[in-house]
Length: 67
Image 1 (tube, rainbow, N blue to C red):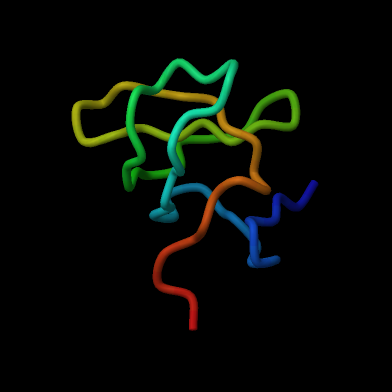
Image 2: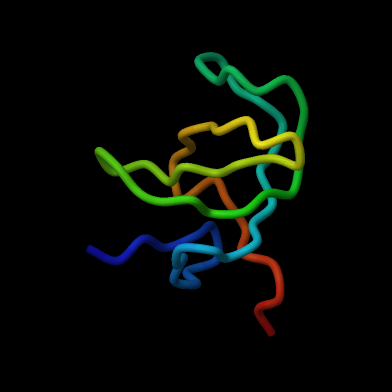
């Protein structure tokens, strides 16, 4: 299964992504840039700089480094 970000770029493990401000059901408190750790149940697992992991819908993320 291919996971696509907000602009249609394919998200792969170890990619750097921008995570937006939290919405209603999110458990992260702020927007941040993190690293993709994996995928499960249609979500992307992203870790922040403190190694906290969050499951985020791929269409909310923006892959960093795409042209």
